[in-house]
Length: 399
Image (cartoon, rainbow, N blue to C red; front, side, top):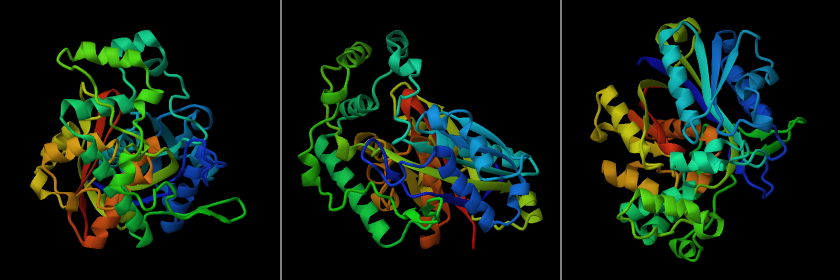
């Protein structure tokens, strides 16, 4: 794999759900189109060299339906020669989009875009009513469980307690708050309205002043929103499982968010021909799938590292989605990672998880911090529903 990351940008994450976030009134295609415009501004003429835009989006319905990748290119007034592909690998969609585009860039004499978009305030999770989620027969045969229940299962099976989860969640919030205050997220592009007014400059989902004690006071989520039938299915699947400890709550779960990300890629020859200066090289990518939902990032990471010819010890910085606190702690402990090199500026628990956009955001955040610390090797990884997972290994290039 010899594809280059020329640039990686993202919007701030707006508050998702029904709480009236700053980005709620913007169409998904228009939010993404703003990043297309920024890439064209930063790299004049590059739109004529781009062949395809591969965009992750987990809920392709409503504003996000009808191939939002191509729609965004049209809304940005890019040439008709630029194609678009919208992909869905649940929460891993954005990183899978990068992996696909990196392979294309490696093989072909053209530039490619990758990234993702998700407007959870406009198109709620499960709004597409996929059979995996809403058809009882399909869900039962696939052993599908609600993401929060899946995280509780990981905590139960791997003996991860609530106290550790609450402490990690508070740390993620504190790191994100500090990073926002000190300007660590340099890949952010402010979102502007049609009249040029800035609508959002910084991530707005962070819980300022979060503490482990505050987390401990929150009630577990699944008993209030979950389906008891799913619990019984899990008990049947794991005969030795007496009960599932419900420990995750809004503070230790990823915040719903609106946002978009975009990455420009090319191979060495194409970059030179178009006068593009690379920030990093994609050394290896991997996809994985596992039986226990949301733990697949471990498998994807190890596979990508093997393909890159590197070990866990070689990696200078890690950026993995905080899917839920227990799942993140499982990833850290299984790989033997040091917290001083892992999600050092917080992640989705604090910053929010705009499903399809998160993978691209991870890469931008990773590169931001690698630049700041002058580091060489980094890993981005993400896991999602039904056991899917994606990972990539990047090498930052001297600037």
